[in-house]
Amino acid sequence: MQRVTLGTSEVTVSAVSLGTMTFGNQTGMADAHGQMDMAVGAGITFLDTAEMYPVNPVLRETVGRTEEFIGAWLAERGGRDKVEIATKVAGPSDKVRHDGYDGRIIHQTIDASLKRLHTDYIDLYQLHWPVRGSYAFRQNWHYDPRKQDRQKTLDHMADVLEALADAVKAGKVRAFGLSNESAWGTTRWIDTASRVGGPRVAAIQNEYSLMCRLYDTDMAEVAVNESVTLLAYSPLAAGLLTGKYREGDEPDGSRAFVDKAHGGTGDLGGRRTRRAVEIVGAYHALARELGLDPIHMAIAFTRQRPFACIPIIGATSRAQLDHLLKGIDLVLTDEALKRIDRLHHENPMPY
Image 1 (spheres, rainbow, N blue to C red):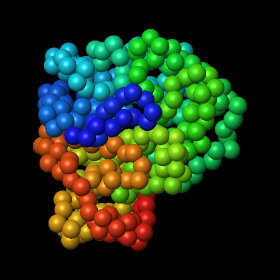
Image 2 (cartoon, rainbow, N blue to C red):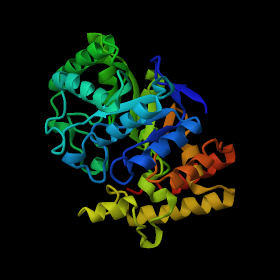
Image 3 (cartoon, rainbow, N blue to C red):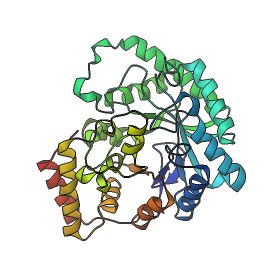
């Protein structure tokens, strides 16, 4: 497995990350430990989690459970120096903390994550959501930044970065990252870090897939010029690109199925639209013409972008992860990439 350095930091990770957001809900302890064993066996040493996980749904009583699953695995297996762990502090949420985080809370949440993870350091500590708001998760359709207070935002950034500088100095955090951020926000975090002596942005975790390519323009330019590595979440569009939701199907245990079981809509966070289902069919047809597995094609695409990109793959079972791992080293030809771009041009983002 290829190794990648996160931004300008000293943290080197595997070129693919294992996402763990189902651990403690859809994925039980034994299966979760089995998945981590499988990932490490395939050379994937980079584990991504968050204090609010598991999700689908997020429940107050399960906050932190995924980190506890990883901590139990580390305590049982050992070898902390053989893996890299990324986690996140939750943004504003009625399930965790209504106001999100500030410098004081950052000190508390880092210590809480360290305890749950059974470790004394976190390789990458991320801000799950900007406190000022975000256009991620389909909020771009009605995004209105006029309510933001620029100076208040900059003061907040300085406060958080000063707390993170303390954590880095104490050896608790090795690198700093963002999530669900914008180009403006990313550059301001970088500027503010330089001004207050805080850690520089090493990575940003935003949604990115064949069907969600908001990152391709302004964020890509920021990433290249400022040396920020993308951690691409939902590279299979929350399962849409597997094809399992075509014809209206909702397999038992799937994300949509579980969401509905807890009173949700099953629309995969707004991704499951009529156009999206149609475009999945087009990508599957292209994969057949190219002689490729559509899941493997989708993951390979994210690894061959003109900016540093690490896909975060996730599975609810070891069988699903086994299928993902079989195509993890696929490299798409130039012709395949050109045909993907043509298809994207004809069928732009469907949600």
